[in-house]
Length: 505
Image 1 (spheres, rainbow, N blue to C red):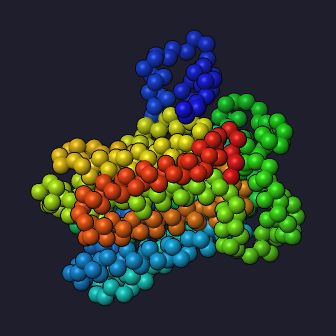
Image 2 (image 1 turned 90 degrees about the vertical axis):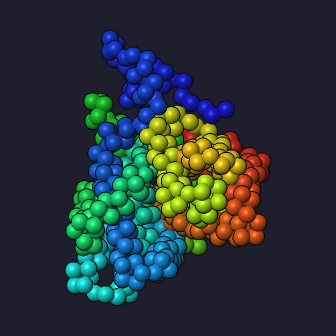
Image 3 (image 1 turned 180 degrees about the horizontal axis):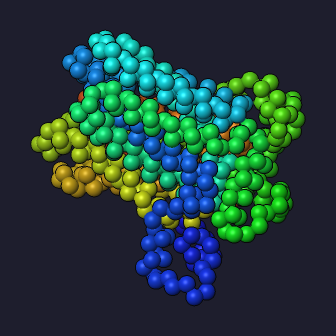
């Protein structure tokens, strides 16, 4: 069974002990334990600014994606050319994702985030300039979109690896659920707003809104302290200080509670990972975790090494299994490419039905994020990932057997909710169990898997559909996912036993 903190029964909705005499109805307490945990937003100003800035900028990015697709179609009248926009995005994300993670592990992540976000802002401004100048060719659009993807591939690992430096380890599941919530809002609101702005004020209006939206992310990063890899003391102390200020108590002394507690507060797991951190920093100008000019000079002498990150991942079965689990879901049981065929063959529908099918998993993911308050009380996170991935596969398989549209949408939404649970725990394990100077590279691998896995799944599902039928592709894929994740659980017993209170990579 999934473990939870028994002691939280005596705590209030905000995670602190309820004050004597404070009225708390049973309904209010249940609601607070069910809805998304907002303690990271309430207690940590740096995280709050970063989350808000990323949410706003992501809405702007989705507006730009919609506007580019509409502009390319208006110029060419070809869906093939619109599809090339996706290819121009995919190739740089995969090619630079791993390298971006490696760079994030040797430079100041705050500075890297500022530079790459500024580059993305300027490229959105370039899109607006192309539109205002009435340039009637698509090549500049393709080039700018590809360069934006490079900026995102370099920015995302740095931004994600900052989170454990801003929060205590026990709030990482809540932070990742809030990030999923922000992503769901962006995916649903961004394209809609992009279409509205293009319809009323032209393509340049959507691009200029994106430029303005990027300033929120830039401001949030500008307010952050330096984020040198391996310098976990500064981030942990800052998070502890913010939490103490919110609680009205005195901040704990650095290192209080012994080395194990200090590592847990910094989101670093196990003595093996501490040795890896020391080995990685050896010869780089001082011991791992040393801050200040010496650490910065050491980081500058290091070279981005993708191979070192892959070697580290190869020797860490729990972290490696998080990626295998996601690939089992996204490659084997990804039905989205079949939605146009399913809409007509199963439901007798049209493009509106396709839209409903595509929106259902996103709606389920959004609901999963909204009602994510319970995730922070789950400690057996490896087991939770296996259950969530199996639930995804089972929901997809049952969807393949339904011929009733509302029922089919329900099971797709259920699959989207399960995917959110899996994502929250997989990302939390990456952030908590890995040493700080490996987090960027692992987040780069995470980006490549998240971007590339569904594309492989599209190819597999389309091929099986052409060879057999949509039903065989969907049902067979879902059952294959369940079988694969069951095999993973049987072979990786350490992953099943993984406990967030003692994270081991």
